[in-house]
Image (cartoon, rainbow, N blue to C red; front, side, top):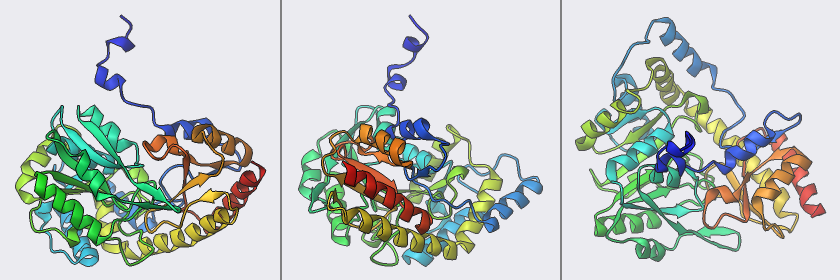
Length: 388
């Protein structure tokens, strides 16, 4: 038996990321405009980095609270009061080592091996892969794509629910489609969860990236106290902190010890100096987030207007998130086309094949970048499309 064959079947089944494949293929090329991953082009602002540096210099390098330092959990409470008009106790917040870990722990908290988890596609591939690594079967329910717009059919979700279903995973605003649930959508999903006794894992990481209002609708707007809902979130997108690997879970306080235990046996907590930076991000970062959202809106318009004008791209400007999900007429192999695009134009896109059912003919472009750079990328892409 080879060393590789001796590994567990579950670990061997973990798929290679179709996004990372493209990144590794073309990373570091001259003149590259990287629109393939979900991050902006700005480094973390100085006021956040300075707080982490001061904490590090002060010697705050020891083991700390598994649930998160009190100052950060209190800052999260203030953040939700400002943006969601919700009074949540610090006991509702649990700090994790990234949004990805928040997703992983949430799935482990509410499912067991052999259970099913229903999720909406096209979707960021890590949702399904994380479930599979926990022994849970991810059940995809495709959004419908009509006239360039993504739409939810609540009947398809209910049809996918069986006696093995334990959770509904809902990402809104959506990565990669930009689909944003309405309050009526959220009420309907919540009614299904209540009817069948299911947990909802709500990924609202892009909640402030809304182009139709101050923020996107949230389950917080329609739920009652202590519903079976776990919210997973991250510091990455709002405050340009992708490399910090810090996130959080919002949960009923009654399950706090369970979440603390899961954190203990995975990372044993997040470094205190990272949390010190996160406190400042929450308390002093609203203006920076507003600038990021305004920049994304300008870049969204530049990119989508240019591509729609080719008359060869099916898409509408997304209502939320930071992505354009593009269907180019005549493209039947998104992976091969994405490789060809980066070779011929220097623009890095993520192939829709990475996002599961319903996404295979699309490509994703992250527009959270300087509008001047987005304009150059749009011109290159429009030229490529015209030559097809």
